[in-house]
Image 1 (spheres, helix red, strand yellow):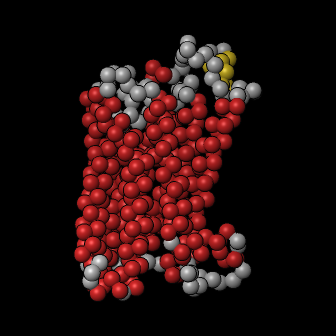
Image 2 (cartoon, rainbow, N blue to C red):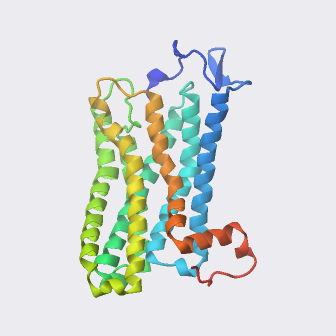
Image 3 (tube, rainbow, N blue to C red):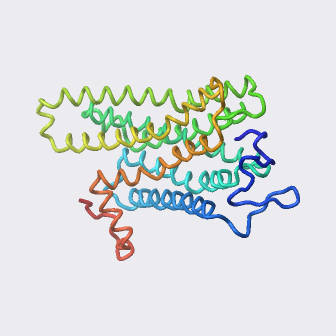
Length: 325
């Protein structure tokens, strides 16, 4: 949510907005939008469509093909659903906010965007935490994996992820979380919300995930000379762990700059401009588009599933029992 001081006013150094024009002390969409405006809408619309389509492919693949009905893929399915909601809900609100540059009173739009943004982002990183736990048992305790991480356990963990995400989102929005900027003068409540929210929703889970994957890495290194390494299942588990670790790494790479700015914004002598914050916010949102491409690149079975869905083969017969290679 952006500061009121940026709303309902023109900037003397930037008197003309690329998408809107002034009319009777209000702003309306111009009948002659600039190239910048058109390109802005096109790029953001492409990101939204790519995010929706990519994650739909993941969801349909896991639901339709029985070979993909595993606890690990259930976590991926729920993560893809969260990313799909980002494309469906967060992208349109963010697009409206970004392109209009706060030329009208969009306090309600900001509130709605913040709620969806925070809850879905928190849900995503909690899902990644669950995936890291799943990978820990698969690699570090392979004999106990099937008894520890069952479909029922995975479902329970997924429900907990969504429940915690909603609670955290409600709490920090009530506390005054403000997308990295302060409304008028920053109150103590807003500052605490902007610090505690990211710490609970991002930094703490990120540290936990990093520690788990480091543990997995050291255990995997010790297994290199072990007879376990010759087992094909061990190879599959290690590849899955590597792929999901890359997913986590990309997530942290795209998320960290924004959350860094949110936490340390009150310490800056000159607050970051809205365009900078919006750019960092769009960087975080773009992460929701990347995961399906990572799965397609590293997983042969996801690649095969995507091809069968895109070419329409799944409509030509019951292929749910097909072996994906």
